[in-house]
Length: 260
Image (cartoon, rainbow, N blue to C red; front, top):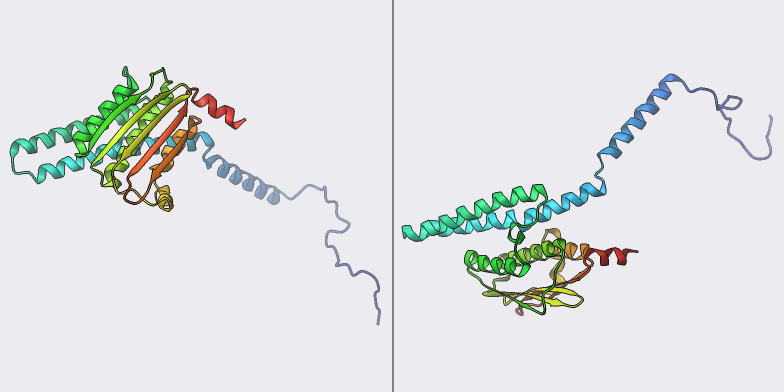
């Protein structure tokens, strides 16, 4: 019987073969197919620009079309519950006007245009009109006020502030059970602060994560971050809710500086 001492080595079936020898054609074909499949998968993955555009569209839809559809539904339900033909006609007229606004907002959203309310208008005027429409359409008293010496803001800052005001009022209508809400725009030397405060039921701070699955509070925070600003939420059960968005006067330039 023969015995072997020392390290045991498994036989190498490829020993003595030239590892640099050309691979069989079938093997090369499989490699090419695998590479093509990998390239196809990589190309289908969304790039950062696509993801950013998707998020923008989702936020725009949530801040405009979703609210207008909700307003149309409210007016149609109100018209259905009214006996008087005159009052029902008023509700239908409001629903028709909201439908027209929805079509216009959809067109502007697809073209990447700014909100129609801000075209040729000052931000204060646009927010004042927003408050009036909210009071009329939702039956919740909404007021607007401005403090400080107004100064010129970039279109991007005005657009984001207006969208945040829209979203905040949407949350008031859906969740707060408030009887009144106030919008306050404060101009400061370093920037601007937008505050929306209601007298509704509020919510516990640890319930913020509940809304994180939608486009409400997270979207507003993203808008503030894009401008180098911040979002503060002050609320509690039975104490109402106040949302404050602070934006530096330089806007996006400040955000870029913070990222360096």
